[in-house]
Image (cartoon, rainbow, N blue to C red; front, side, top):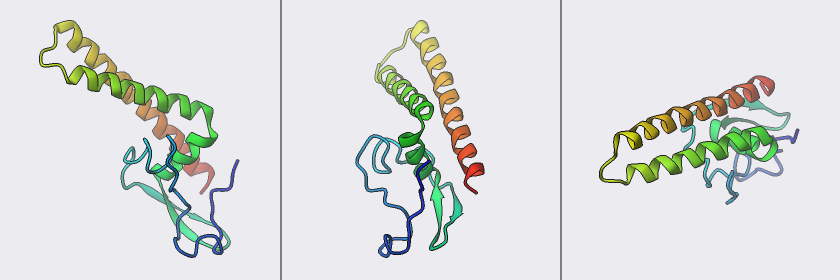
Length: 124
């Protein structure tokens, strides 16, 4: 697994690892705001800083294929729900589909949160 810690020499301007990536899984990409404000503290020999859940999700998105699949499914469900919500009127079937999609989307978010919890335990 890649080392997520940044040495003092590399991070004099910022105590956190670089999250300036513009990719899908970068902190400014799709994952931004997925888990707002939650973090935990990691230590390294040269620096101590807190990783937020968004930063952990960014690492998992790069390194864990299963997390990436769950995240992509969550994003696809979010887009489908958004398209349904743009309609002025929903038939009972569409309303049922919307509720089903919302439940599955929540399950995907719970699975992503499980990955993040496991990461925290493994790296604390």
